[in-house]
Every structure is written in C-alpha cells, then in structure tokens.
Image (cartoon, rainbow, N blue to C red; front, side):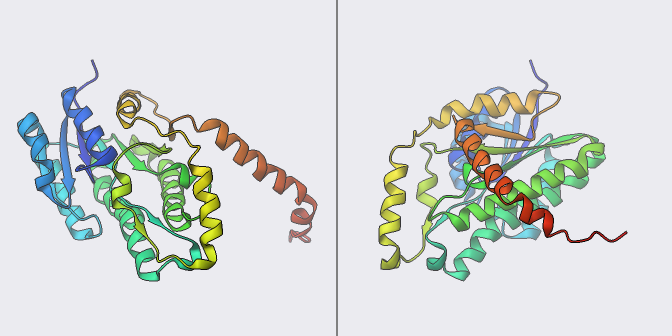
Length: 275
C-alpha cells in the first residue's frame, strides 16, 4: 500500500479535479481541495471529514494562491502532490477572439498554474521531495481549428512544465504533464465561446463534423492512471489519457516530413558560422 499522500488541488469542485480528489480521498490520502465556491466541496467534506481541507480560491489571485498553499501545508504538515487543474476553454476562430477574453483565459490556465507552482516550490524544495501535476490537453500537443486560444494556453503549460522538470530535478521534485483527450466531464459547461463571424461558418461546420467521429472517454477510468503515476518512484514527464498515441504519431510524422522537406533551406539559413 503506498504511503499516505497529502494533495493540493485547484479546481476541485468539478471535472477531473473533483474526480481525482475523490479518488485520492477514497484510498486514504488527504487533500487541500480548492474551488472558487467552497460550498461545491461540501459533499466531499461530509463524506471524508477532516481528510479534506476545503478552501476558497481563484487562481488568478496570486496572493490568494500563495496563502492557500501555505495554509494547506501548515494544516497537514506537508504537501506531496500539487495538482494544478483549474482552467477552462475559450473557443472560436483566432480572428473572432476577444482580446479581453484571451487575456482571462491565459490568466487562469497559464498564470494561475505558474502561481501555484511558484507558491509550492519553496515548500517542496525544503522537504526534498514532491510531485507537481499540471493539466494540459491533446490541444497542447496538436492544434485544432476553433480552439487556438485554449490550445495556446496548453502549449504554454507543456513548455513551462518541461522546463520546470529540468530545473527542479536535483531537488527531488518530480513533474508530470497530464494530457487528456476528449472525456465526458462537465468541462463543456465552463467553455466560453467567441462571438461567431459568418465568414467562418463553413470552416466551423467542417471542424465540428470531424469531431463527431471522435471517441469520448469515461472520466472515471482516468483516476487509476493518475494515482499510479503519483505512486511510482520515476513518474513520466507526460501522461496521455485516452487512445491518443496513434494520432500524435501522425502529427509528428507530418511535422518531421515538413522539416525534412525544407532541410536544405533551413541549413542554408545558418549562413557562415562565426568562429
């Protein structure tokens, strides 16, 4: 039986955050569960009692993030797993995107994640151990029409997580980026949609038609995978959730083909190296 772990989870009121919080509690772990509205966590508190510390948190409030992380650490005495899960989707063509909404999406999905990481790291470094889980998406690996802004936030999470894994390795801190495909969560209820332009109606229809053939996963089946990752001594940097590998292989095959086709032009662009 794995040693009891103490989790800090953002966005624990719904979707994957709620599901993985409950899975951790069910097996005997303890969780600092945060949500914009802590009343949404009442069910977890009723069932698991003192094993849950419910806290109100908007991850776009950097000072509040630091306060919540430190409060959770003081309450349970340590933090083992940091799950930066809070986020939402903003959908629409790039031209349709409202700059204010783009900024809000980045403030939650990217800057919120950065705040959580920066708040937790001093504590994890002092412990000499810990595991940071960031939530990306298949949209953070490959681009899809009408999802460019959300995808850009997840590409950013991928990059900062990979960099982080290199920087904190000597401190005993592990990093895993979780990359789900489509699942039947309530994520869709939080999606914001950019005002549609009629010029993109045909493109939108074609993209939506392709998505109808995509298999939608059972979110309950993901909990075992996440628990397995936090229990192993050497966790992966990236964890796909769903049968995504064949799709990703094709994406990278196309990328490599494009780079190879233009290799001569790329090499010539180096010019005459100095020294």
